[in-house]
Amino acid sequence: MPKPLKLDEIDHKILEILIENTRIPFTDIAKRLNISAGTIHVRVKKMEQIGLIKGSSLILDYNKLGYTFIAYVGLYVNNSSQIKFIIERIKQIPNVTVAHITTGKFNVFCKIRAKSTTHAKNIIFRLDEIEGVYRSESMISLEESINDKKRLMHSIFQDINPPAL
Image (cartoon, rainbow, N blue to C red):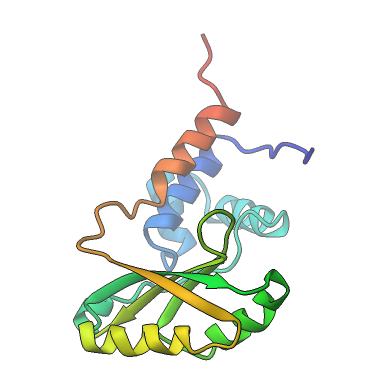
């Protein structure tokens, strides 16, 4: 069992701010939390060294770029020994933004972004044509209702730092 992380409320607040905006300067975080920028730097470095923070990301609004159609595609694979090969072929389709190797109904579950239903159909056909894929099932996303990176973090902090009674 992995050793539990030693994080406190300041780490929690730093993470909350960074989740909201990964590009915020440490000096701005320090001002918001009323502590030194050096402290922020040391704590963030510590969280990077233990692997809790891995890089940072930029979030694009694909809708503004014309990619308003989201679908999820489950792939059925002939043989699980082909999954590595299939994942390599999926990586060659840029419209597949997420792919998971899964248990249960599908062997691989993908998220695709497209400009239209016709565009999505062509992407799905490309997935179907991958050697080793014998069938797929698609679901259209009507709306992304929840995309919250903070709720789980807050719940985890409650678990590792329960309030004192």
